[in-house]
Length: 589
Image (cartoon, rainbow, N blue to C red; front, side, top):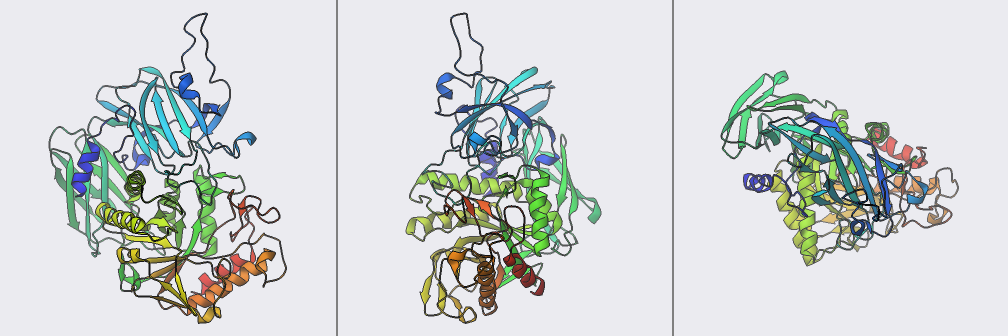
């Protein structure tokens, strides 16, 4: 099934004009021969979306003395990678179209291929090179690429990208979501050069259920016949050669003794892959993640997830994460809290953050942005969701720190929702049979002091995950220590969100929600911890959220002003009382 999927996708060498390049991106961009196109790009703000009518993508001078253009790429620039909202005051709330332009020079050599690779663009992108449409992409958090070998000019080339971050009913996420809609080319842009036949993709992890069998597959692109592939892990004394078929695909498995990755020992091995024409290397770790009844097992041993939810935002700058330093800020804050687990919410986050988290020993939950209000009756939505899931898994499938793929957040059970998410669960296991599948629920039943999980999607998941704001959105039906969680599904349970809002420095009563005090937020956390202690099925908790974050839906003029105040840290990084409550709980657990 995997081979058929790869063969179908990899056959699309160049995206047909007007259509997205639907194959997975080449893996491990950091290990490629890449020229960065980051930096200052010229930009035109297209307030009323008239740019296509004006033919901005051509960027041609007037043809004669009687003609003229009603646009120009002048001195106005925007930084790439970055959102546009944080770069100019008049773009702070902007949802619309901006055209970006970058000129670059290249001297292509015979026998080489070139690709333009985007780490992410939010939300929709139309990409032109030298006036010709390369293709389109939809989805704000996953990478995409276009082959440009035949479109490149020796010398100067002109890359123009139309970016549109307007929300839509048929988007993922849809019209309403509880975070800032940062627009722009938000992650790195690279010009990648490969040989004519190159190592396009590979999957190398421990076989499910085995501590000493490494298994996976590899796909070459541009092959003209069968070709030997050598996989080496020098630190483990491993070197094996396999023969790829004429279509470039090979699956493999071999026995070996490796030191398994864990939060206390995040061991990564230098893995080298060679074909006749290409070579690539990266650091890869090996671990087992399993469930046994309601136990969660890492490398065969029970583990409790001491987590935190993180948005990909630097609140001090009111901007998206755009650099390695930005990602490190969030990860170091999670480490100081005492976490061993991070829930990257509610979308695939920057690849550097994922890689660095793995190096630092964090287990990770990744999810696609199917968030409240998505129209599951639409076949278009189903196709987009499958593409986003495929792209997320394709990028991070070799990151052993990722232990959970999540399908959605807070979706209401309906026949159509159940059908779509069940299909996504099956699809994800086809792409990656080694990881656990989850979906965060917020719909429960109640009976006295009982909270009941009976979502039918639970049958298709490996882990139950509950977003439950006891003491904030939901009053306590009994004393926190007397709350019982009940379900017929004997699976590990994670409380994937809980918390309350507070303004840093606002002190007072601990018994009135509308006071927005640090004391009330801390009391909510303490009460939830009392509830956790009476839940024998609980295998992890994930407070919402690391830091206050921007959200236009938060409209209280005194306490919110466009900020969701559930952070354990303020937007300036100051620790609220609740931060200390969670840090102490993690230290004792």
